[in-house]
Length: 255
Length: 255
DNA sequence: ACTGTTCCTTGACGCAGATCAAGTTGGAAG
DNA sequence: CTTCCAACTTGATCTGCGTCAAGGAACAGT
Image (cartoon, rainbow over all chains, first blue to last red; front, side, top):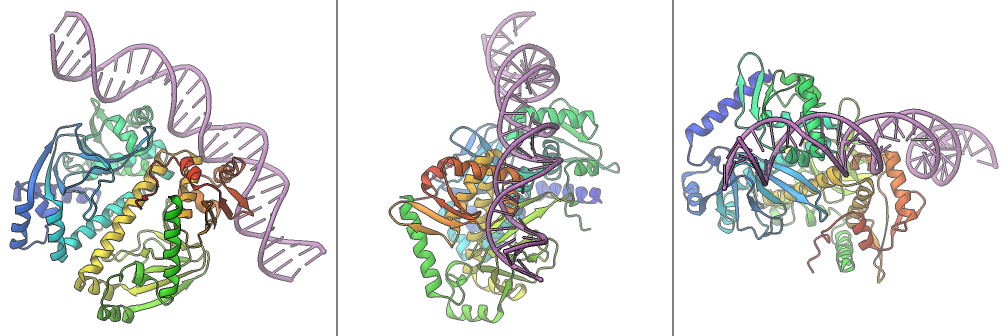
């Protein structure tokens, strides 16, 4: 069951790179239901940007002249207090949308944690397109509602879970969503590379990097995960990991 | 400056009840820009529901046959784990929207904490209206983006702030948004009644009710707030409270 | 091979906030 | 007025996680 879901996702990732190596966002983000003439308009205002690992995409307060989707790589959204405490508020994986139509200034710091390719649209003409094209606005609404649900689920993690549960929750999310995800069929085993440093994980989870390190070591000792090197993770039993995450939902498996 | 903002809000609240005692959501939520024929369609599918303090509006997983706006009173959105730990993920104040178009099941528990009046729309016809009426979809997108920002700001509170800062942050939010808000001109003093029990505050802040109680007592002892009874709060100096909240932003005051 | 750098691990200790346990207050019902 | 009960306060103690500190591993540059 967990397995079926994972296979479905894997297939999705495959078609994702086969059908449109040019711009995957056609399939999964704003232009999923666009007609050819709308796609032509999008082509006109579209351009690619690349960022190196560690490079900032934008800082909170910057004037934001584009919106766009992540094509490959992973970026983070975060907020920082004056005294330096920072909280990550979102993880941007391929197909995720960046930027808020109708607002000039960026509200968060966006940083590439791996090399990132983004498919950008100039903001003003994109907003015009959105105004003429109801289903683009619809698609954006759907995506925003999904993000809102994700943010609220994360509020439960931040407010009420223990350090160990927090780590397990993060691993669950990455196992489910990371496009580098891989599965050995039949066994339910999931293998992936952590796309974040211990410090970035700490900032996502509201912990310190030492606590993150200790809890990962503990999960390893208890055989919930197997670590090779510092980043390569094997989850022998996803159900066990979900249990550790204190997750009652089974991830929305419906068939 | 803080004062100007508060006066503006007060005026807004006044006009709010004067101009349309019937259904305030016309001014502030989905139908802010509707034409008369669209308003007529809304009238047809609209009905009111009332809930008593403490009563549940819906439970997570319930079939959701309506969407709507809070007209008066205060409700909470929360998530619960199997073992009973709960996290509030949103506070619903008058004009806030409830329900997700395009989804059957409720994702959260919604509970009225005071007596609540809601203006509801049957979900299916509302979705139809939204599909024919781009600016309704637009308004919903704007509102959803605002909620997403609020959720992300709260993630910083949950993940990185101390108990004292959390309490101050909550008081700040209530002082800014509660419609019962009142201000003694000239002094910058703000007066309001807490709409939540200590336990509800704890669930919002990821704390225990004892810690909430202690921190409120501490803020009172340090004269950041004045308490009469258990619920009636006077904030003699909003800037001081903002400082306690560790809030670098000045709340978006722009003029 | 040597050195520096970045990322990570592990240990020792302290403290903010949880937990457990009595009270107190104030309003509603009799 | 008295009783009752939910909402709140306050104290004593415990503990999970933060803080501080000392290394180790992997890797790039010289």
